[in-house]
Image 1 (cartoon, rainbow, N blue to C red):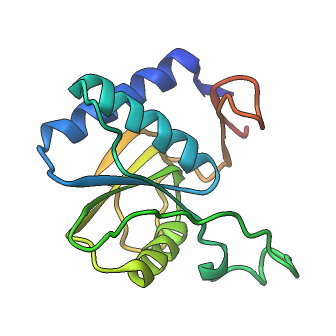
Image 2: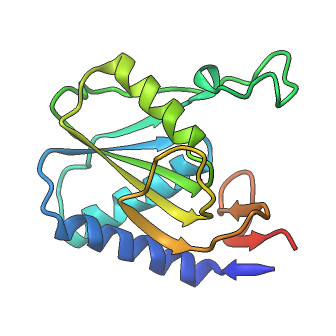
Amino acid sequence: MEILNSNQIDSKIENLANEILKQNIDDIVIIGIQTKGVVVAKRLSRKIENIKKMKEQIPFGVLDITLYRDDLQEAGADIPTIKDTDIPFDINNKNIILVDDVLYTGRTIRSALDVLKDFGRPKSIKLVVLVDRGHRELPIQPDFVGLVHHTKNEVYVNLNTEISDRDTVTIEE
């Protein structure tokens, strides 16, 4: 069942950008969590830059949490697929906008916080998610949310990239 179409996803990301800008956070950097969080983060970054009519791009990073996961053995992966982590700037005393596509148990975010700790000590970390599924296992809550849809069913985010040819968010029935 589709819960967001392409236009709705774009609208949610624009709303997230406006909510972030209302906070007047200085010295921000944006970091997307692999894989789909990176796509959402790139779109969010572009929206913020366009709204503010910025001439320079917001510093942008990519974070892979694979080796920090606490469920590698449960997932049955003997050799995990490790993606790129690329944070080409100093995060010390920066305000990080950490972006993921879906928030569920909070374990991915806990892993992301562990990775970021290895890069330095940011001034703050604000969590942005496109969809919040609820049902947390850890005390982690987003600061900015596109859509709250409490479900234990799987949520699939398909974003127009080399992986998918359209933007949709669907829920397993």
